[in-house]
Length: 284
Image (cartoon, rainbow, N blue to C red):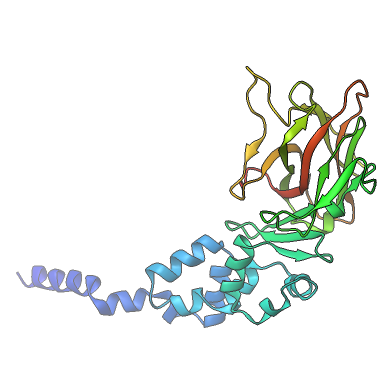
């Protein structure tokens, strides 16, 4: 009988608040160690820690944790952006702002954003950051402003027979050990012509590697052909140009191109916002 009483008392003690407090590792480890442990997980996990553990919330929400989820050069990126005042924000607030609100860099010709799940870097090269054949000839292209664009100008095709658009980005600006994809972000106006019955070639190539595959895609889609371009949440369309692995982020260059040079017919009505580079399988 005495043995059973002692056993019952032990079970009650193990389920009581004193035992739970003793097992709370935040009471056993220095704050710096707890910060390091949480920062080695993910932004989503840090939010879960803060939600389920009142004791952990101050640490899980701290600048020490969330600064580790930001790029190592985030201060430099923000200081030369259109929103330098963001540097005064709490790091968790800054992370979620950058994951949902692209900021303009490079004099407004590019945008920078973070992927919310992992904190990996995403960029969009605006139309002004691209090389567009005859882009400065008003007879062929015009530059206009659209309220739905993040950039001050987009390129609108009036008419060409030879269509060629190129862009490039340095791999050191991207997250290492990440599989990226490039997407043409565009619209077709009501007067568009030449894109429903013919494909365009899109291509992504990492400098110093074997030339990548040239894919043929429909920007507009004819009847009985599955639509290849996808609508984005921001109202634009996008189509994948290709993918590449940024393994180490060494100094190198990734090049993107859009080309259609069949001079038997004209093309018109394409509106280019830019080319977005983001981790593969992350939707917009």
